[in-house]
Length: 190
Image (cartoon, rainbow, N blue to C red; front, side):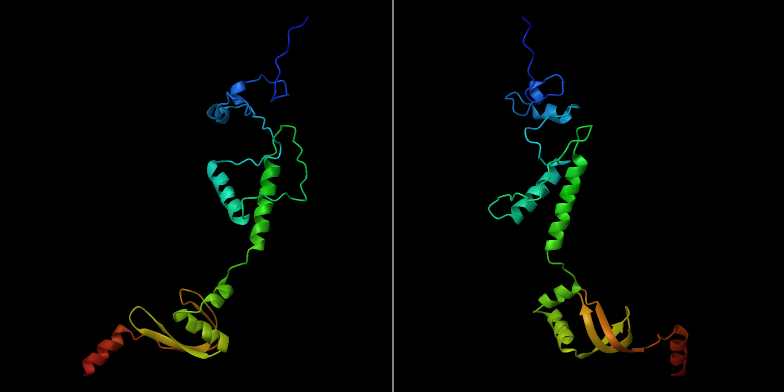
């Protein structure tokens, strides 16, 4: 009678069985599994692989934020993943992960200058918002570090929190800065 063969519960590829690398084993050692060069077989084939702990944490935060009650929704268009000849499905998993991120970004409301302008109801920026909505003629004085450079009259179309203005139908009055020579001549005449 032949000797009983060593069963490989987590590995059917003919590799030698190491109980410390088997996830379902009570003798499983995670540190050894992390630094092992052998591929670890997982009990479920549709597991998302992460490159590091930070990637996992950000995934879990997004999952908690998106699903009240921490309930994950099954997808209707799930396609069973086939392993490539080397046994890795990282590229397929990463592309599906990226597709899911793109879909979530599209669902969120896009925030831009125009949408932020609409939310300003208090403070000095609310005056600019009123000028945009009522199409009021506005005078804007431009200045340098020391002197006034000029003045613009026009209608505000858009603005941001740094008081950058986009204007239309603008009439600009520009003052050329006085040179030092002219100031010296004026002082000498007096």
